[in-house]
Image (cartoon, rainbow over all chains, first blue to last red; front, top):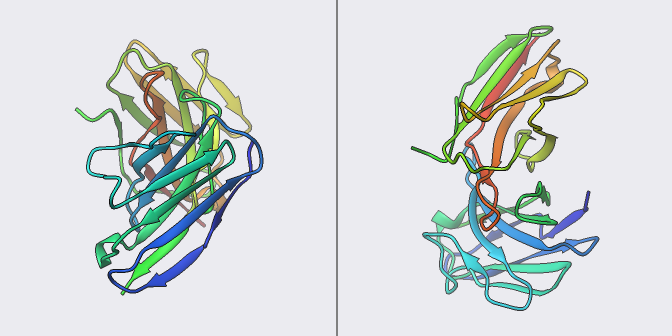
Length: 114
Length: 110
């Protein structure tokens, strides 16, 4: 399975700032996704990162707050914009070879907003 | 009705016990099924795919009942290292991402 690296692994940020999380896959993959997971809670899909076009966002998530880039088949970024304490969470990147195929996850970015 | 439903647990079992997790899904057209494991403060990791005929991997057995829209995971001879949250995951369609259940927490006690 693909090896997925996320950077940074953790960060503490000030309210009102923005942070960009990077996700690098060691092989070309068809699908890349971004999730959020609050401590002790289930995964919530933020969006599907589409190569060469705008990401597909889930209900409750918008591009202005969570802009996503995917310039090629191995790399994607998620920006958390104008952060507030409610954005404190673990953000996870995943990748798969197709929508029906299993996803493999990066080890996550732990984000705390003061 | 939620797309994927699991008993949240926690299941507290002694070492050596057999434990079974159940999961139901709402869309009868679902095609792909998986069990993931997530350790505390770690990312989810694929445990096993679930095939129509049922499949086994060591102490772990997964079964699918399409008529009842039901998936199960059986863990035999539980180890302390099996303590984790087990996520039921379903592909609802070929046009949407996988749907993750909320997970069932297992604690294996010495």
